Image (tube, rainbow, N blue to C red):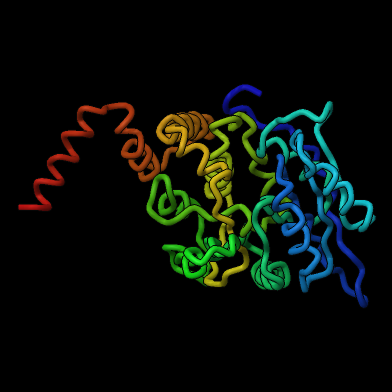
Length: 319
């Protein structure tokens, strides 16, 4: 798919469940995985353990070559009607963005929950997030505070390293466009929500066109950033203070791999150039957004001026 192209998503009419005379929304859970044999069982178990029972789980194989394919197929066989195994044609590796889109296009829940194969949910995640959506029909997405999970290793040095950072934004409230785009990384300073923490209305994903499949390979680090930029421009987002997921910290994660490979600035520049084209294509004219984007691009577009500006700021700070 060309850079910046909108993925083609085939959305079905969202599903509701008749329960005790009322219509209960179905949550479709999308778990893309690639060689995740160490962690996939735990991720699936955290979905099976939800207090909210109205969900279906889509395990999307992104071309795995380890035992995770067999693990996913086993769960689908053990829980027919609730857990489904799918893959790309020819068992190809197409990246997390394409895998998320594939699962979303096949599912039909009114809400879509994302879960990375190396993360886990806390038991009340879906119950509490669906309740917020019910109380606030104007919002398109919810997230809270992810726990950065080190202690999963069982090592003594990791036992006390777990922490759940504050969102860096007012909580228990809806943020209207384009507030989140301006205030969240990489244009702002608020931390980016973990994909495993998000719950979205299917209609919000449909309005914004899903994940950008050009963010593949090393650029996969920013596939969630590109998706969130599109959401932030169109949808009201509820930021909660609750912690609903555990974000597993390990050396084989996408973030660790990109940072170890020295690709951080290559990937960040790719994202900023994509965002520039996307804003132009959408006809965005808000001067606050363009000012923030120019500031974020300055180290790459004007490296000498950026170094001079940083030196001046440092001099003022120490004088």
